[in-house]
Image 1 (cartoon, helix red, strand yellow):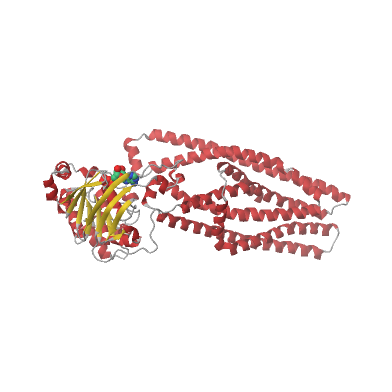
Image 2 (cartoon, rainbow, N blue to C red; image 1 turned 135 degrees about the vertical axis):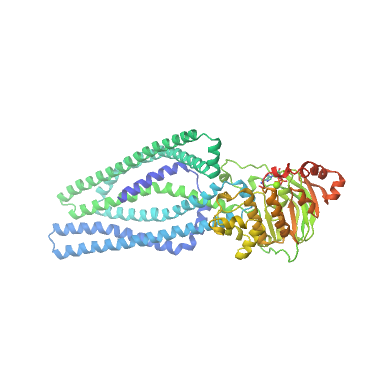
Length: 632
Ligand SMILES: Nc1ncnc2c1ncn2[C@@H]1O[C@H](COP(=O)(O)OP(=O)(O)O)[C@@H](O)[C@H]1O
Ligand SMILES: [Mg+2]
């Protein structure tokens, strides 16, 4: 039984080896050591236990041989009983040691998973927004799950697989050779007969396995895409369900065929292995019996040899696949390190300051900016492309300068794609400027702590994102210590109290995937409620009411006006009423501020603003900014 398990194992390893042939670096090994260091006590204990277990494993066959000899030589019953009791004792100790070893290896492996996971999670959290705009979430999650587990496997497999098997193998071989080197060597002659074809078959199976994996992945994508609420809606409205079914069935069919072939290959492998070891066993009995009859070998030695032989094949087959197994799992380690090595583009300075107290001024000083290229922020393997796009860095903003005095409200207007949202994103330091400085209360945002920026700045974007959590959790994100009353007050002011109160679970209602169960306008009002709750000193509204109809907008405008009162505000406007209320209007075109003044001043100047005013703001039905791209 034990042998079967290891045989499966080595066949699988042979298949995996074909998939990942990349050599690993010595530095990776060194870094694994760093992760292992805190656990070294456990590792030593584990190794010690492995040696002990191996010693016990050879003791039992030897004792069994002694029992046979005692019987043949007509010893007293006391001797036999003592030997039998010793065998029983060893079995009990072996069982205990087995549990202890397993406990140690499980703790080791799981602790390593914990360390790696938290390290990766913490690191990824530090990555800039640019990283997340490029990477596939799925690829990232798979690093956290599959690769971390793969890395752990490399670790425990080397320990339990290689180390303890080598010890068992050497000890067993040594003991067998001392009993009869002729029989031992002969019984090993048959080994290549099954190891060689197994390797060749492994290579062939690998191709099939890869194909199955591709099909499975494709089916997975198809399911997650089509079985989400928006996807299912799309298929029902425009799709062809029968085509979808046929495609899915063809893939599933191929996976079935591969599954059958793999099962047969595995079964052939195990049968071959069982056969070879049975043949070797026959050889031991035949040859051993011959020697015993001739008197050159004790009968007990024959029994001992036969029992030892059954314990020899299991570690042998395990080791046959161990090398490749460890190698492929090391690749997982490397893939984890690859993530840990990504340098966060935006880092807090060690001596980061807080935003000075009091009302806050906002200043852009000759700010130029281009979105970073993929090469700078991402990993090819995470984007699932061969090479990273090194384009990008094309300037989006050119020497943008303006200043909002504490308490002032600045409106940004301009055609879609002009760079308004980009300006908004530089303020909370979602990106760093290429040239020039962004300041909050006179301090360069690069000198401020992330915490302090979060406490100071509130932002509502066009596509207000909600976590798949309760309404309450989504609201408290900005101010975890807010009271129930504060929460309801914010909801009331954003005109959402009625809706939330009518929900069966009230504040505890989970707002579905991407807040799907709420309408666009409701979602936006919830993010506005979040802003009202957090009461930051600077407020950025990026087309914050674009999804609201005119009735609810009028209501929410009131709440927003309240939220903006006495605060410094940057408002990306899409309604004339907002623009008119602003202390200053900046007209942004192609990344530059082309006009700057009050509504009356700019209208009088008869420039771009006047043109925008005529085409966008005057006719309420054609609200140009409504079609603007969402903030990315
Ligand atoms: N994440 C991004 N990566 C690369 N380019 C971007 C990104 N986001 C926006 N852009 C580009 O930057 C320019 C300005 O965009 P944006 O600031 O969103 O315009 P606005 O908000 O004024 O409509 C556009 O040309 C847009 O395509
Ligand atoms: Mg925008």
